Image 1 (cartoon, rainbow, N blue to C red):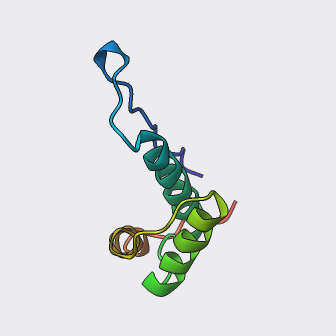
Image 2: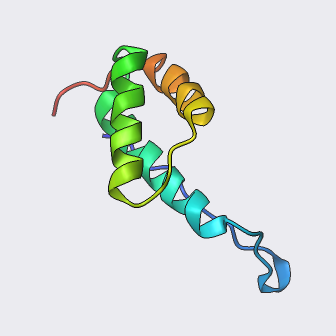
Length: 81
C-alpha cells in the first residue's frame, strides 16, 4: 500500500490562511478515498469523497469533488495485499 501524501500547511512565522483546517480535513478525506477507490468509476469515487467529507463535518464542493474523482479514477488500482 502506498503511503498517504504528506500534508503541510505551515507558513513562515506561523501565519496560516483562512480555512486551513478545513483544507486539511479535505486532504485527509481525499487521501483516504484514494487508498480505497483508485481506478473505480468516477461516480463511485465522487460518492465516497462526498460521504467522507460529510462524516468529518465538511460541506462538499461538487466542482472540487468532481476534479478529485476524475484524478483518482484515472489512477491504477492497487494490488491486493
